[in-house]
Length: 148
Image 1: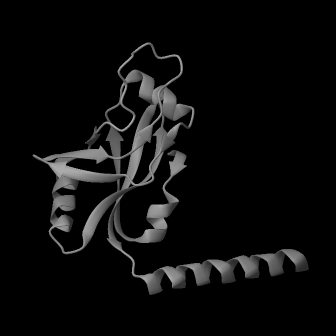
Image 2: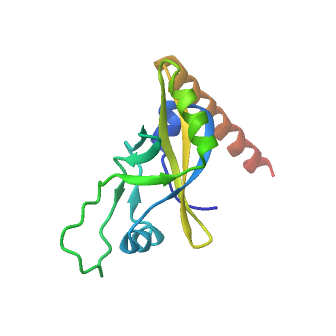
């Protein structure tokens, strides 16, 4: 899958317990807009209602050459998942403090796919630890690059 946009804020704020890849039901103009990279997943999440999963809060910009007048960039989009995957996700949601977040959107051939993750929120000290690890890795990479 070729990644178009990654939700870095979700990866920082949440501890990812399990990942799934789902198709997205889109309009023709929306897939064109995604191919151009006009998508933002910040603040988006997945909701399960009546045995169906929906992506909420994702922003897909209007395609500039689209002739429709009433376009909602924040509309809910249905996700395409197997029944077994949906059942596993619902079982995860029964746990306390667990949510489903959108991690990345990309193209798999001609189809748009969404990478979703079952996640638990990180505490403040966990976020500080993540920052510390990232900084030390960056310093090690710089030192290696200088000496090679």
